[in-house]
Length: 306
Image 1 (cartoon, rainbow, N blue to C red):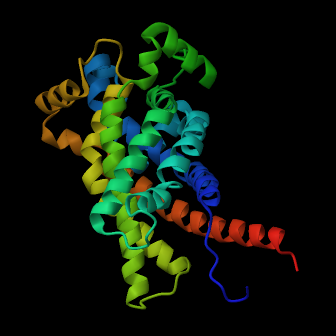
Image 2 (cartoon, rainbow, N blue to C red; image 1 turned 60 degrees about the vertical axis):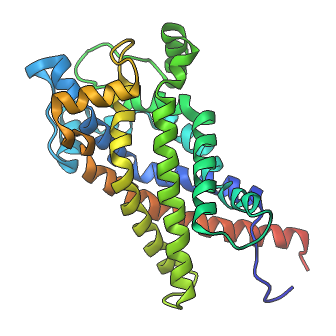
């Protein structure tokens, strides 16, 4: 019917979220790699001593990596990263609205508690499903590749096989609990904040439901997410990258890190985290909204071409 608002289906949201997240990852992946390197820097100094590569700031880290390892190093782990986003974002973002409706029993009115519950649920589901891809991605990003030094893994498939062989299948789910914690926080901060900012903008007629509105809501969501999620993100990165037996648990990892490097270590890589999360949120949400509209219109045309 002409003039009727198009409502995307759960399937459209599921595949749209995964596709949009992959596009966002392709654009912002170097910032994510820089963030990982900064987060594990204290660990590298401890293990490698004075010979450890020292990184300063976001763009300093990127410049150092390009100079010492080549431009391709910025995309170490990209294949696992895209595998992660296609499986991970599809669940945590694509199923968010469906989970809200589940908690409200099909009604459209969702309060802050319902939104938080939906965000926590889809975030935890996504981690349980996609954790191995995250472990492999972090391992590739953390690996410093200079000269003729032996590679930790020869390929993404080899990484999955090697981790399962050397550390057991449980090794592929290493850091699962801190990652569930992180992604429950990230999902709530990211999706709930985006949801509420967008709703307020539309409620008070500050903007129409279009690109500027999506951009503003995504930027706000990115900043809020970085502030609340950085400490858990740093611990998650350190723990997933650690060798067998280095830390007894994620809590032990956090305790040792604070003891040896101080509380400020929990916010290591904050600027690349914000640059990455902020830009990732903007690209992802803007793309996601456009994909949803495009796929819904295409579906409607396919069902009713005349």
